[in-house]
Length: 330
Image (tube, rainbow, N blue to C red; front, side, top):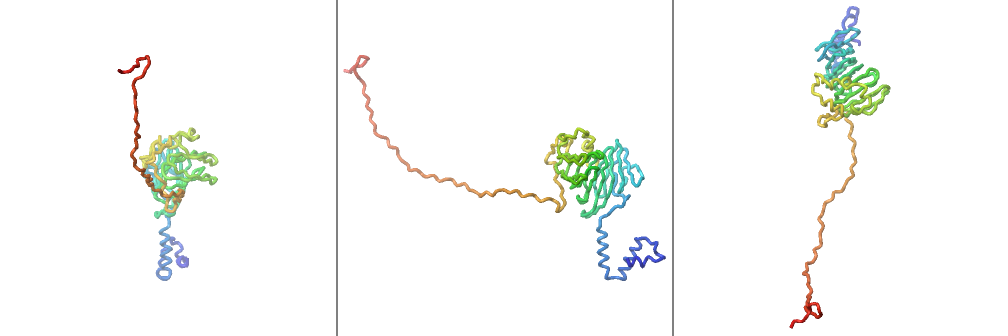
């Protein structure tokens, strides 16, 4: 502060902040050697801080544009083309017969279906993956979201009826305006909190969760089993299951898998928890059984014996009297 005041005389008040900071550093290094360690510490902290984008700064690019997609920032509207930058606080709108695919600087990928609309609210990305903030506001329509390389807890997906935090996740969202949202999980896990602060976790791939008016959060289920599934067509709800986006051309599950809730187990990918975030496994008590060894029983040997056969004499006599053929031999 003293250095800045010294350099801000009547002749020098028009210098830029960058030039003023440079003069201050030079003055400290030259005339205040005892402050050099402090300056080095402050510079290291400044260089290690997350890169925060200002409103209007480029935070990613449009990797695919089909038909008509617009970007609006500060009341200035433009037509987006493949390869164009997208900016912080820009509103991206897709026509009813169009598609858009965006990639942010941390490699987060977002696909926007026909009629979709979102705002790129905030982008603070730390390459060290320890801090930051990435906030997207989904206004309406169908989306696919794939997390990038930033730390997973910094992602926040906002909708009119709930907010979504993610963990290494691939999921689809349908936003029905201010009425309800549908979430289809492909991989990982999401935590969904309604506007009243009630939260539920969805960590079972191929399952769908609906958050309705007033924040109602019934149990997740298969698409065909959900009572409200007939109020919207599958193609409208999840357009990127019907036709995968260019940045994710080989889907994990088929449409049939999702509709029937039959996700092949080999394809199910587990949640990618951050270090120190994975919940501890509950220990299951198993009664201890003493080890038993089978011992063949010993049989008593019975004494050998010779059977004794009694002497029996049988005498048979033939003959007799009478009148029925009997007689005596002479």
